Length: 470
Image 1 (tube, rainbow, N blue to C red):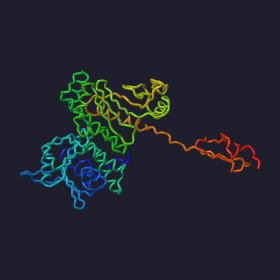
Image 2: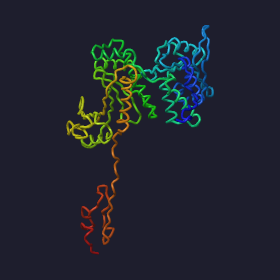
Image 3: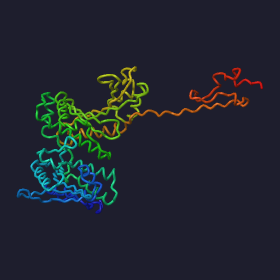
Image 4: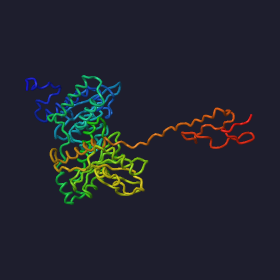
């Protein structure tokens, strides 16, 4: 190794010198807010969904306020002003495993209300189970005049990567600055961690499910359900960062409006079947990517449903699917659903279907209306990350299933109708035009033969093939 090969490149936001959580939070706050004001596209991406005008951002750190004789110092402040409209938000930041504190947030909500500010924005490694939810419960009375928003560090990093690599930054120097923020947030010492823990309830819940002693009233169940929802959100953020598109949780409007409905449904499935399930939606794919963790079987199952072609025999429809899965492993499970049938359809592994497509056809007389494609992999059991961890087994399954299966599937499209060639009739040269009544018709085929019937004349039926006396 030469001397130069051991040199370290200078970084705009260095990770060296970080000692303790306080320094970690201060550096992360300053780096993020500074880049938000320097790179306009990135700053707008984060703040416009919160109600800020499309304007240049002013950002500050450690802004002091006095409340009831106490000096309070939020980690930062963001202001956007355009014309007569101004939007201001206080910022509270946590890094590492530190969690947001309700009392602290309520103090900042009071400051914002008294100062006429619009919002309080929190940033931490906590990932809410549902979009728009805040991970910390506060007094709702304090939210009447001030909004409370939350960004997870995973979400911030995802938006930064998507802006730089996919949406683009107009100024090359600003793009470099945004790249330096990404490099910093991806460093382990930055404190902007990934989803790394299923919580203390994970192991006792897993054991209770396997022993079939879990009850709906057990306090450990809701905690694990919410963490699984957060894990799916994190999986979507990771996938979206790689794809350059927004990957969202697969939720109905009712579930978004009333999160308790989904929580109750998840708890019922967990107690009755020992399963945790959910899904993510990826734009322009054939369907929702479903994820199921079967705690009794110890398997993680990823699947997608897609419509079958609306024309052709059952064998033709099965072959249409096989062609799209030419690079998929033989262990992929396929299921065919027929029209007007209830329950499961014919199911077989891809390897067997490749050898004999007929095994996926239960009844040749019935129309196949759709297919399900699934993979099943061993489920990790540890609550954290690393070898044999539940989190890594889910993230790996989602990533592999999308890469090997979903991105290669295309929805069926009918063949556009073809314009039929027009028939052209040329009368014999020795027949006067006045005596010819045959002309091209929509009923003619591509090839036009002799006239189908004699042509009536004034006094007789005359064929164009028979000469007429003068």
